[in-house]
Image (cartoon, rainbow, N blue to C red; front, side, top):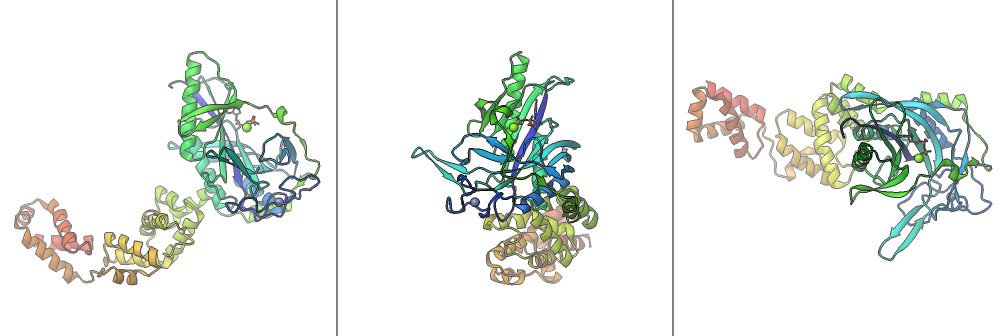
Amino acid sequence: MRGIEAVIGLEVHAQLKTKTKMFCGCPNSFGQELNTFTCPVCLGLPGALPVLNAKAVELAVRLGLALNCRVHERSLFARKNYFYPDLPKGYQITQYDSPLCTGGYLDVEAGGETRRIGIRRIHLEEDAGRSLHDEACKRTRIDFNRSGVPLVEIVTEPDISSPEEASAFLKELRSILLHLRVSEGTMEEGTFRCDANVSVRMPGDSTLGVRTELKNMNSFKNVRRALAYEISRQASLLASSRPVVQETLLWSASARRTVPMRSKEESHDYRYFPEPDLPPLLVDRMLIDRVRASMPELPSERRRRFMRQYGLSDYDASQVIATPELADYFEECCSLVDAPTDIAHWITTELVRVMGESGDTPLTTRVRPSMLTALVSLVKAGRLSGLMAKEVLGRMSKTGEDPAAAMEDLGVEQMGDEDEIRAAVRGVIDAHPDEARRYREGKTQLAGFFVGEVMKVTSGRADPKLAIRIVREILDS
Ligand code: ADP
Ligand code: MG
Ligand code: ZN
């Protein structure tokens, strides 16, 4: 709605990539058989005592520094009390009024502009179990493998002003989590989850409007859709002078609308109090300095370096750094052959496609960097057309063969010498005397037509650049 301003603040939960859980030695791993990684601590049995996972603290410090936060040398754990079947202790251990990190920011690009989004806080907490609702038999099962998995919660300032900006923020944050190797960051699998607080106001208003909180958005697309829906819902309330009710809403992806879940809880509902079983969390300067010194390159830095060092466009560079593994793959290719732009294109289009088909990652695909660079070199040398090369790549991905072997199996001959192409060009010109005459009379755009015909008679094996040169050579003489 025109003339109404949206205000958005996000709360993001990301699971930390540790070997073990937050407060016990159970493996941090699920998707396996239900309830196999549990112990008295993460099942909440009375008397079991938590011991803090040092790696989780280190990962949270790494994230805090990357998001320009102040990392506090002393912070506190608290109990957040509520009842739910997947929370066996009846409380969640989290951080409340004294979190690990505060006061950071993240710069994101949205709509051609760079916006600075404030980070209010980052704190550590434990995940709850996972409820599995079985509609068919009207039962809910609970998997405690997730109970006690370490999380960071990242809370922004209400600095976001549109669904697109929210989505850009989440994508940049996810990319940072991946590049820092702090979290897997998969929204669909719930290792990266986001709640959004939304309000609207008239432009120029300095006070914030009443907000609602949106939950249950498990993809970037759903975040954008849910926010757009909720902003226009609130805008029409405002336009007709009806009040926005402060409440928690669920996004229904199937109905494409938000549905009320409960009236908004207040923090006093949770009866927070300091966790008596854990001492204050002390993070000394030395640890912070050590984490800072070993900080991996951030995605924004890596993108800029790729543009500088390899001459990639902004767009190509951001495609290549989609994941750190893809970026590493690209750099390995570049160390083998000097053709960064071609390599970037082959990786972000064809390699990504064949990996999608075989369900592989850059680490597991059978097309190793040396094999991809060999293929790209063949194309660049005009020994293989782009079209054929795609087919060859598909075969390489299935069999793990190098380009030469894959070409032999596919019966693809390299169109090696110029004479062969020259013969094909002559044949095509002889077969199309009219076009040849019109070309000679000045309609030189017909060169493209001849190249197309050459590609047809050579089943795509000719190098189009060489073919066009020969077409011109013959017709211009
Ligand atoms: P709670 O603890 O109830 O979730 P907080 O006050 O800590 O609430 O805020 C949580 C999130 O809501 C933050 O990201 C904050 O920026 C955002 N937020 C707070 N007030 C508003 C508002 N009026 N409109 C939009 N977002 C808001
Ligand atoms: Mg909240
Ligand atoms: Zn355990």
